Each structure stands twice: as C-alpha cells, then as structure tokens.
Length: 342
Image (cartoon, rainbow, N blue to C red):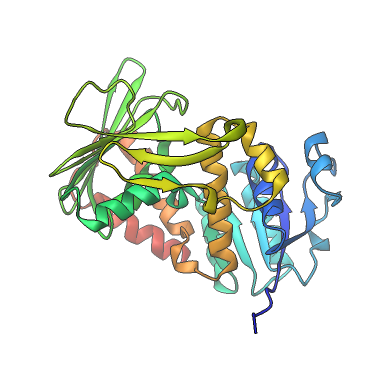
C-alpha cells in the first residue's frame, strides 16, 4: 500500500522579488507536498503577480504565525533580518524548519540565529547545489571518465557567495586553503585553492545570459563556452523543446541528460518556465529540487546557515585583504562560522 504524503505547511516572511519570482512559483509547483498558509510583510500589501498566484493574504503581525506551520521562509532585506528573528524568538517557536534567503552579517543577528537554531532547524535557501547542470557534471566527474578534477572556472556565471557555493559543490569533500582577488578595471577574479590543489575561479561581473563554465580535468576540458575554438574541448549544450522549455543537456563526448523528469508536472509552472531565459529555468528547477529534498527530510543535502556565512565572509575578507594569507584563514573562518550558529 502506497504511503500517504503528508504535506508541509509553509509561511513566508517577506514578499519581494525573490519570493514572487522564485520561491512562490516553486512552492506552488509542488502542491502535492506543500500548503502555503501565511504570508507576512511590513505593508500588508501584495503585488498583483502574487495575488494572481495565491488567495493567501498578507499580515503585518508575525505574532499571528500559526502553530501548525512546519516551514518558515525568511526573505527580507539584510537590515530587517534582525527584527524578524527577534519577533520569532519572542514568539518562542520550536520544531520549525527555518529557511534564510539572505546571509546575515551583524554579529547581534548571528547570536539570535544561534538561539533560534537551538530549538528549530535553520538552513539557507541556497539552491545552486541542486542546479541540474552542475549536478549532472558532478555525477560525471564522480564516474571518473574525465579523470581527476583540476580547475573549475565560472566566467560571469557565478555571483559572490552563490558562485563559491557552486564551486564547493563540484569540489567534493575538500576544504578551502587560500583565496585571492585580482581586479582589472571593473572585472573581479576570485581564485580559490582547495586542499587537494583543485583551483576554483569566479571571474567578472555576473551576466548569466552570456556567462559560461569551464571544468578542467586530467583527461578532458568540459565547457559551456559556445565560442570555444579548442578542438579538444568537450562542449556542453542545452536543447529546448516546445515553447522554449528546457529539454536536455548534451556533451560532444556523447553523454546526455533529459531534463523533463526533473520538472514538476504542473502546467502553470511549465508555462511560467517557458517565459524565462534558460538560466532562470535552471534556477527554478533547482529551487523545486531543493524543496523536494526538504520535504523528503534530506537535510544533510541542504546548505547550513554556517556554510553561507562562511562563503559570504570569505568573499568579504578576500575583497578587503586581496589575499587571505596565511593559508589557514579559510579553515579558521569556517570553524568560527560553524561555532557561531551551531
């Protein structure tokens, strides 16, 4: 007998662009797994787009958070996180899963997050580790076909701590030992060196429409750079199906991955995907995969807040000092971020 799926009840705190364009469409695409029960914001008003998607109205009073809420998504500007966390602490909530979409720098906020984490489970809404392309490439690297990983380059396709999270996803089970920053005119080049001597690079301002990745291995170079003129490169490409909906990935070495099984079977969500550029379709699919992992209780696959804090602070430190010498700085910073939250 098939086990009945128990839906998780969700409350959203915040109703800005990220909620409207990514979080809410992803939740509604998984109606068999989640119930959206409440939305909180400062104004009590919702955009026309959100109103068209849900009948849930907005409240300004977090004190009205229902006891049957399982998951709380906090998506507010960084300077408002402290206030929201304080309100949740005052309400003495327990046994909730809390997702943060923004890293929190002020030390006072971090201390409150630690208190919140003591009686709840706190995670970052960092969905790039669930990105279908990077997940597929990771599985191919793990198979050993392309040899040993040497270097990961995100050219205009990695954004600060999100880009670092992507690189760390591909460089499995190895710690960072050094980070540097070189700046040429308006182009930043972050370089990360891991304990297995794999190099990660994050270059340029973000431009997802024109950005690409290059992954150098001992037996091959895999790249999504359409202008690559290196005949030895293994080229990565994306194929679209009817109405611009992403369909599959292909490598010139012969491998391919069908994307359709990864897309929730929700007509409204598919229609929304068709309106988006390819990179945004991939982000939305990654967001739904993150939520599915959450619903399944696969918490070990989710980004801890301490991970996001580490990535955020390491970027900031590297920007200030240009190089995080001595070598041990990333390791110490990672340890401190974990102690701050756990």
